[in-house]
Each structure stands twice: as C-alpha cells, then as structure tokens.
Image (tube, rainbow, N blue to C red; front, side):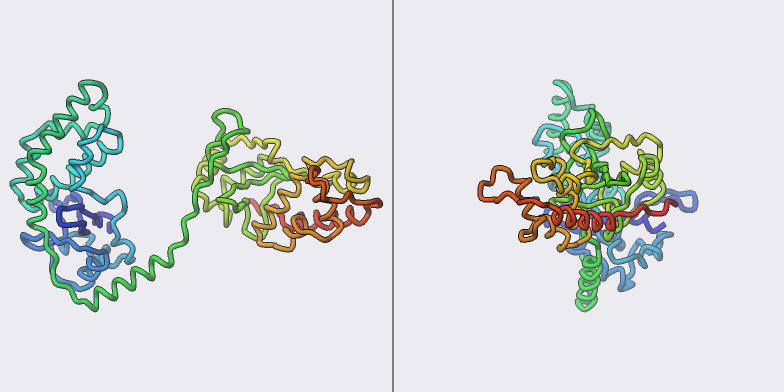
Length: 406
C-alpha cells in the first residue's frame, strides 16, 4: 500500500531536510527497509516541493523497486508532506537529554534513535551501527518513562545522557555525510510549489475545539469535558432538545447552518447522533465523543438551568407589563434568539432583540437593564409589544426543525 512509504523530516546539523522512508516490508521471504536515495547517497531536500519534483522527474532511485512505489508516486501532492509524527529532530536529542525526562521527551528521543539506527543500517554507516550496538543502555528509552522515575531512574537518565554526549555528534556527522540533493529542474520545482500552494489553499480551515464547560454538570459528565451543551427550548405547544457549543464567540448548533436540528426526546436526539452527522456541529473536534456515547447507549442528556430556554408564557406576561416579566427567563430567551440569529446569519432577527427603536426593543431593554436610570418605563397598554414578541417567536420556530432519522 502507498502508506508503506512515508515522507519524513530530519533535523540535521546543516538544517532540516525532507526525504522518504520505506519501513520494513517483506518480499521474496526477506525483510527490506529503504530510504529515498541512490547507491551510497541518501537524498534530502530543503522543501516538500523539491521532493515532489524529484518524484515527478522519474529519475532513478532505490525506492523504485518498492512494491508500493507506483501507487505512492501517483498520490495527491499533500501526501508528500511529512506529518508531525514523522519529524525527527536529531540535533535536538542532546538538548532533550539535558532536561529532566518527561513522557513526551522520552518518546521523542526513542523515535530519533530508531530512525537514526535505521539510516545507519540501510546506508551501512559503521559509526552509527557501532554506536547503538555498543551501547545497550540506549534501549532504556524504548521501555518508556517508567524507566526514569525516582532516584534510580534519574541516575539511568544521566547515564544515557553521558553515553549520547560521547558519540552522538559522530552519528550526526555520519548521517550528514551521506545526505545529498540531486540536481532538479527549476521549472519542475516551481510547478510543484504552485501545486502544493493550490492544494493547501483548498484545505478547509480547522474547526477549533470548544472550551470545556467548567461548571454546571455532575462530576465526570461527558458534557463538561467536550464543551458541547444539551439545550432545551420550550415553546407554548412543544418542547425540544438540541446541542450547541461556542467556538470563540460564535454559536454552533446541531444543524445544517440554515436551521437547528431539534428533537422531542433525549432518545430521539441520541438516535440521531448515533446514526447521523450534521453539517456544522459534527465538524467540531469533540463531537465524535458525543457520537460514541450515543452509539454505546451511555449518553445522558442533562440540561442545566442556564441552557433551558422557555418562550412559553412570555407573551402573556408582556401583555400585563414589565413588572410581570421574569427578567431571567426573558434574558435567556433573548440569548437563544441572538445565538440562532448568529448561527443562521440573520442580522434582522438579531437586531429585533438587540437593536433600538421599536416598542418591543424598548420594552426588552427596560426589563433587562433595571439599573439603567436613563431608560423610560414603557406605558400601557402593551398589546403591540406582545404582538411583536409573538411574531419574533414565530421566526424562531422557523429556524428549528426535526430532521429525518436514518
């Protein structure tokens, strides 16, 4: 398979280079391993574009005999970029060893040792193979951080550091000594640069992970860790459940961007989550955790008080007057109106509750800002305000829908 050939990046004394590595594969009852190169040379390139230009050129090299070479060579251009997990800072090994060990540093050193050892074996670099074969203490990093806890662990870590300090520069010099960059057609390099830029520009912007909710959920609750909230919306004749999170200040609902998806029961919501993805919330990094819980039946749809939005009865309270309206209930309702308006991009709907000028907006401002002495109390009758509120709720109801469940 094409994935058997891996773009890698090496941090070497003369700078970072990118090349290709074919980890061990079996052919004709023999185990093989190879790097991009020819004869005694190991090819390294300053940029991915140069690597891509070499592959496209059809120039002779050792990886052409790999069973997956043809498939890999025809891959999308982005497949030639080294993933973060395949970047090995060989120069940085001594610096990591000069600090106290951590899970990540031990793992990084282990990976650097492994790739250096592979290069030494494939390129027949005696300096490299003798360094590893003659210093079995280096294998301690392969066993992980557990080897380096406590007094004895730190003593072992210092021993590894001393061993590496004596011979690592020679290892780096040996690897650098076989590294070469073949001559490339500048026009092909320019073409590769443009192709990579075009492909990178087409990559969708990553959706950031929402901030975890610090309070409001039982200890150990999934919702507090994923930063996604179950939401209850109560209209005069119907009650719904949905999901929402915030990416920065932007609200994102379970939905298609034009409407939020709502359900009349937690079971219906869980069933949808288990079997479907939506167009917006499913792009959030932590959504998959919610989907897994819905699939295995462990999802507990717990709605906190500050995520319950009750529209029912507000119109009747408005008809009586400001003193009758529960400002907390009204504030939450206005919050949901604003969030839905932002989600679907309806600036007029948002302005209907946040702007100024209409009788309803003046009424809302007065109720929600009781300490603002500059606001004049609305005068009875309040029929117009109640009518405008009902129209507003009608608009909100049009922004929610129950999707078909697969």
